Length: 188
Image (cartoon, rainbow, N blue to C red):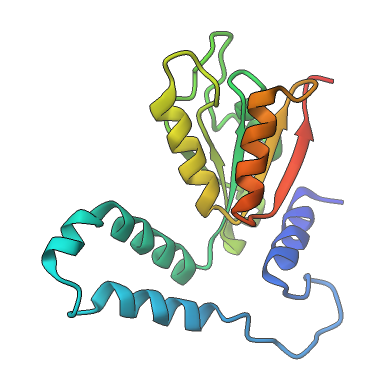
């Protein structure tokens, strides 16, 4: 099975669409157009006072980002986990190329880095490498990792051994967002 067909099947499962190569069925409205309309109405609502807009500027930017992703038809897959669990290396392996920097030192990934899967570029599949959680003095990067994971369509949670207490807590936090989670056991 090619990498592209695996990603197409994943995309169809996340979007509840028939996979390519399967018997055609009647297209079911997944509600994405209604969601986009609702988000646009919220962003353009003139009844929201400027003071509220200012106070919630970060949330409004987040909604704009989600709306743009929805309009482009992108599926975002976040690679999430503890520092040095092998997130970037796994992302590179899934992509089939060196898109993310890897290193022997903790904390090589300091920002959320995006890469489009070449074989499924027309399907809008974007892999996002996130900074590691539980890094010494890495609270801001950990918050970024959680923020990215909370708005992604799928989270690949990378572990490199038995779950630590911090990983279990992070897993519970992500499960509460009701995002699909895939647990990847690495280095085993």
